[in-house]
Amino acid sequence: MNSYQEAKQRLRGSIAPVVTPFYEDESIDYDSFKALINWHIESGTHGISVTGTTGEPSSLTADERVQLMEAAHQAVKGRVPFVTGTGSVNHQETLYLTKKAQEIGADAAMVIVPYYNKPSQHALYKHFKAVADSVDLPVIIYNIPGRTGVNLHVKTLARIKEDCPNVIGIKESNKDFEHVNRVLLTCGRDFLLYSGIELLCYPMLAIGGAGHISATANILPDKVAQIYDAWVEKDLDTALNLHYELMELNDVLFKDTNPAPLKAALGMMGKIKPVLRLPMDLPSAELQKEVREVLSKYVALSDTVAP
Image (cartoon, rainbow, N blue to C red; front, side):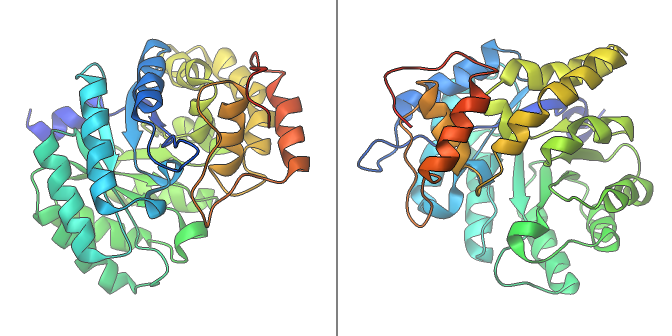
């Protein structure tokens, strides 16, 4: 079994996309960051991901992203797989960050479809092939058309997978469920497919998915991990019950752009200071009130942090 095959066996389950905590002055709160990682692992999370969408990479400098990778790697200490987001709108920055991920010792790099530029499918192929060829590290592509403005076509993905043996999977934050079915049909059912859409975590397991990278894991890491655990144990009733139990929370966390409601919620739980860097900001007072009402049905709230 080669290293990429081994990675395919390990990189399964709930890979939590951890937020990047900030102090009031918007500097990075590394103590809270490491505490969150420990809490995730102790709660049953199967893997840790940082500097993906939920980690606000566009609000971070390249140096800060590297520092967060290093801090996360030290906090994880090999207890679970560590996947770091290295994608950017800039090709050279993506190459730099992906090479850094390999140097640091990440188990895989997650590389987003470049946003804003809206590259062609041919250009996307060249971009991802160059990134994959630059490292020996397993690569997971991240397709989130609602935020990038372009959808990575299945045929393009299949071509990348065929030509780049270290491209082992894809996170699909894609509401087109026909599309995600065709990913496994075309790329093979051993290709790792992760759900990045909260309401599709359970359905993607049903078609052969490898797990999920769900923002809601930041609030309930145990229950989001248990969906996968129950599925593997063939306890379908438990998995389906959890799917519906989490739906109200999933919905409220996405009534504003992620991770704004999520950071408000974590502030209410006393886990972090509820701070985002502009141009992101906390939700309206009205939505924060709704977040608190829904959140109180799932967890105990802190009285020390006001919404």
